[in-house]
Amino acid sequence: MSIKTGDKAPDFTLVTKTADGPQLVKLSDEIGKANIVLLFVPMAFTGVCTTELCDISSGIKDYEALNAKVFAISGDNPFAQEIWAQKEGITVPLLSDYEHNVAKAYGVAYEQFLPDANLIMGGVAKRSAFVIDKEGTIRFVDIKDHPKDLPDFDAVKETLGSL
Image (cartoon, rainbow, N blue to C red; front, side, top):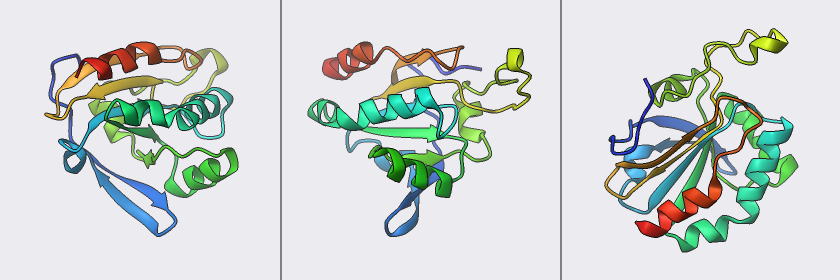
């Protein structure tokens, strides 16, 4: 079941790797501090995911100016995410959904990732974007079926600007 505009954002607690070691990020602890942009990406170290998160990292001030905090979620382990972030200069917090539970809760888990390439990997997150307001309500949803398609970041910013 997919999450839609107007739904309450499902809470989660995921691990991120920082210079101080692994840290837990709980969505409900972030609600109310700022609007939130959740970006689901399929896999670390892949071209489109790297480009997307490098672009977001280089333009993070645009999101901060709209009173938003951005988090990226993938099914990779936090140690791989940390190496990926260091290698590519990704500054967006990367949250590890290693068990794919959050991707499933948000309705963005592939049943079979890239079946045409015979990649039988269930649970991989579809590339998607969610905007969550300070009350914890979903205000924007953009879920892409093809992993090379990017969310509409102009629409994400427009939504943030209206909050």
